[in-house]
Image 1: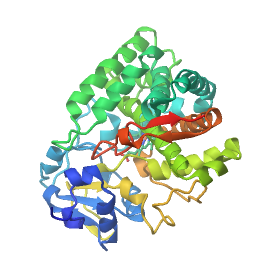
Image 2: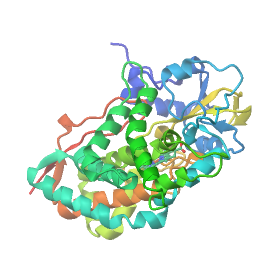
Image 3: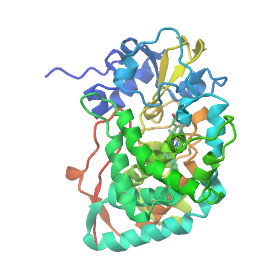
Amino acid sequence: MAAQDYSPAAYDPFSPAVMANPVPFYEELRAKPEVHFIAKYDTWAFSRFQDIVDVLTIGDNAFIASESTLPSEEMLLDRHTGTAQELPLDPLPGFALLGSPHYEALRQAHIKPLQPKAVKSLAGFVEGLANELLDDLLPRKRFDLTQDYGGIISASVICKLFGIELTRAREVLDMVNAMSRTDEASGGIDVPMMMARYAAIIGECVTRRRAAGADGDNMLIDGLIHLDHFSRALSDEEVAAQLVCVFVGGTETAPKIAAHGLMELANTPDQLAEVRADLAKNVPRAVEEMIRFCAPAQWFSRTAHRDVEVAGARIRKGQRIIVLFGSAKWDEAEFDAPREFRWNRPIRRVLSFGTGQHYCFGIHLARLELKIIVETFLRRVGSYSFDMGSAIRYPSSFQWGWNSLPVVIGD
Ligand code: HEM
């Protein structure tokens, strides 16, 4: 069998080899002095930490994710014509596809329940959930740490935020998991199908809020219902389209990071012992390294809406860029020995939550959930190990993380 070619020329985000393990490809991309241009897709691939910061912090609508933040291979193959499409505002697409000032107006309209004070008020709820779940799971001695523990916690928080019965948390989790799995044949996500499924469940929540008067009790939804920015009210479908990012981002990422992080600690008993020495003090620090080391999102895309020169790349209007967050975390120029998990490493900055305009606004909730998921588990569990033979990390062009991590509880 021929040896795998990891050179930049062989990098294709949708190729089976990259989707199975992009890390060696990223190493070669970062070693290349210039930003890599993928001719097949007419797209620039940014792999270095600082280059990504530089390109994502250019304002003035130079880059807008107007085609999608997560385009399929088919979308990238559809070559640009030197123009960048401005999306019509009626009906309104999801806010992530829009530039300023519409992007910010929509984002601000539903950000309140995810701001620090509101998130802090969820701590008791999340702790209660974590303990209740462990009461049920620990006697089984073996369960899926990603799905049965962290996954149900994150999905339950999303249910609470959206006003969905908590008994539907497993359904929400399964839906997000199913929709986020990249199709191994096409390498992409079936975006229209995904949006229709989400629109149905989120749409029900919006319709209920409007019928109940949308009095401001649930600002995630009511803030969008009452938004006064487009000289007209948004329809239920338009409100639902804005909420997909919170629904998905809030469900799928934290559980993979928590389970993977607990695995890294189990694999390095000295580090686990150090963290255990003072859980309340040390877990928040260990969580920061988990966020750096274990974040599963590989890359996001934007389209250039004007000619831009950055990091030596001459990007023409209409071309796309992809920013490889999955590569930035292994950048030796940013982190000392980046491939080593060190629970208390100094971390100046990370790209796990993105940067610039699209910076994740679930960050406070993500940190709260991660801290409680990890700390409660370590408080309640003595020794634990993983059945790696049954663990699953699906090949993916998007979320390359531990979808299933069976944990075995010791004495
Ligand atoms: C540890 C967990 C999480 C990680 C690592 C993470 C990561 C990210 C990243 C990398 C982005 C930027 C995407 C881009 O540049 O296009 C992002 C955006 C976003 N995230 Fe998170 N996220 C997490 C948790 C959450 C949670 C808990 C929520 C909500 C409850 C959430 C909601 C969002 C939203 C609404 C956006 C903005 C999308 C956009 O403007 O395009 N995320 N997240």
